[in-house]
Length: 333
Image (cartoon, rainbow, N blue to C red; front, side, top):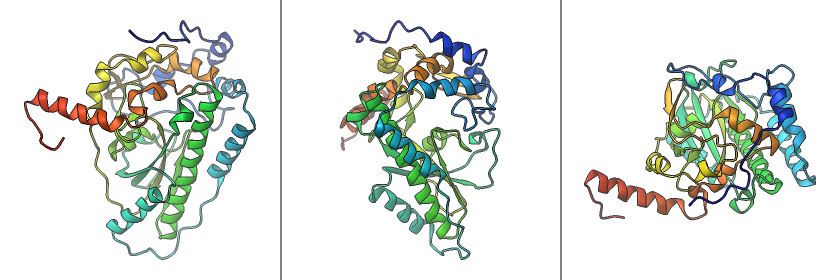
């Protein structure tokens, strides 16, 4: 039996709904569309004065009662995002793709981030109001402190979300700076505000994991408890391969995040979104609760994969299940 949800039944705040008006985020996201197309900005606009949903997003910011630590974290993140990058060096460093990959991995070794990956940029990942000529995406992942994250949607958990967005922003600027000093074009992209590209599709493509039912990435190392940033570049880095762990099958049978979601925004089956069948969270159900709590993250925190030291064991079990279903056996697990 599922644990009783303390936030249900949920009724959306009337003031927020009035500010949102007729804005339909699912339509903007392309729910039900069968043709591939670039994404449109649905939330996290940097310019709230011009966006259709700008007043509603401002209401979101007004709900939080930050303490001194949260205020400082946000200030530091804003500084990191605004930090200028150095000019691109005139001379291009004659390093092989293997050497560049090793140097990129040093950002993990040094603790700037916990994951790196590389993939070629696809047109359908670029927001329809943006352009870029840079062909490659370097993805970076920073891990949450689960002991802090588990308190969401309370402020204690929210502070760790902000803390990791800060780390992600700093990491992307460091990587972009390194590439520019090597003579390559590089542009940092970091959240939560909308940047040039979607973050999750290239992270899936470069091996960060698989998409979960809650609309976030899951992998055995960090579950869903991590945040993303990126660097667009023309550096000759080789793509890293996508990885599968059987998470798709797991999510089709698991209902933990569904049951935990206060506004019941997580669907039990995949849906078509801009020409791709995938797990999708109903934006118009999700955003009122998200706004009231200044960011929710409950689905990420309750995901079984996010629990410390659980994911790798789950991956082994899923591999064994797949082997049984395929009528094969392995001797190394």
